[in-house]
Length: 322
Ligand SMILES: [Zn+2]
Image 1 (cartoon, rainbow, N blue to C red):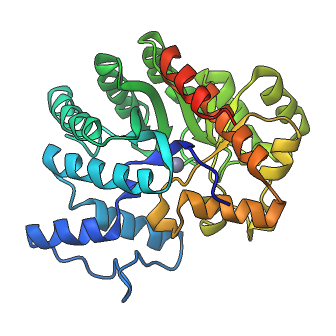
Image 2 (cartoon, protein in one colour):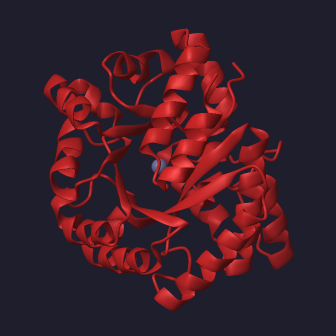
């Protein structure tokens, strides 16, 4: 299934790091990465805990604005080769200067200078706080987001361990980011159930939810999502690899689409989940019989929910005309 052009709304910049790039950077810095790669050079782990360890080990080699500039180039070239013309990347001030505003500005400048140099694909940044670091760190992250909001930093989001804290604890951070004009999204309804999605909608005022697929277990919540036009950033391959669903046949993405839920398809941390966006499309085509019209529809929904200016949105929608 080779539908193009593609839009991707849920991609963690560090999580998209090609293994060859991380190996090269580690070699340059003399950092030894044990147990991170298999013989073929892919990221290797056995379970969720192993995934987190490998993710942390691989990303610890990224230490400077220059490293993130090179990462951005590698990731965007990888996405462009897969037919992606527009991508929104989660960027974390925790990894980029430790939530220090001045350091964060330096990282951002390097990241978006690199992004501007890659033709044929546009990137916007969603500044992302890490839930398990707690509400105070989230407020500092929101401050970094609000101070740098503009043409390229267009969103604020939250990832991390969904089992810790309550959504309401992060309401001040999201309110501050929203006041700065940023689009709002939060991971929820991945490892947490429908209640986690409901609390996220109630307290964080998001227009999009990262994953959100567990909302499929609650018909009343699904109706609310459809009525309010909440967009779900669905990452089927990620959910299967991390065990949210045992296999793709059990994934609710097709049911959600038939229920009229606005959604798009993304890869989350693609090389860690041994996937690509074309591979996700192939799987959906093979499993649920999705064809060109379905992929055009999900990409149109991505354009409609994108955190971008209206001129960019119109241009993206025009590219998706048959
Ligand atoms: Zn994610």
